[in-house]
Amino acid sequence: MEQITITKEFTWDMAHMLAGHLGLCKNLHGHTYKMQVEICNKKDSVCERQDMVMDFKDLKDIIKEKIIDSFDHSFAYWKGSDDPVEIQIADALTKNGRRVVPLDFRPTAEKMAIYFHELIKEDFESKGFEIKKIKLWETPTSFAEYTSEGKDD
Image 1: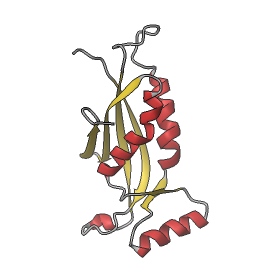
Image 2 (image 1 turned 90 degrees about the vertical axis):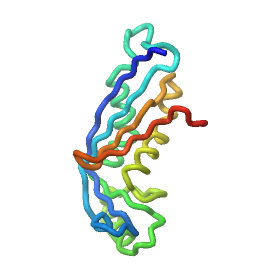
Image 3 (image 1 turned 60 degrees about the vertical axis):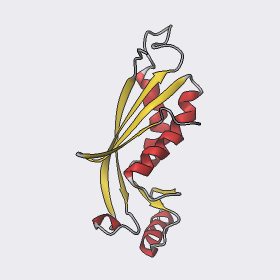
């Protein structure tokens, strides 16, 4: 079946650490994340009145509100971590009014790609769109990709 999709790219800076990891990523560090969101119109290949899948500005507004506004220049941490340093850092930042994002999972690129998909899914589905793919770069050469095709909801 032929289908037109659109993709928009976003970037933000975020710190994290991976409790329990045996490598360097157990230390506090940051990345400039890059994310691509690919969507399609569930009904037709393009919106009838606009001759486009979705206005790129509308796509941008959803991602900005749901992801960028919370995660940009933040410390994302696993609130269930057994690493006292991770919890102490999060507590100190929170007490001093810094941006902190508590998560129910270790903030790996893989888990965050799934989380971001779930975070924005309803916003797109309620408007008649489907998220085809989330691609999340943690470094310029390393990314995780999440596709929901064939997944039972």
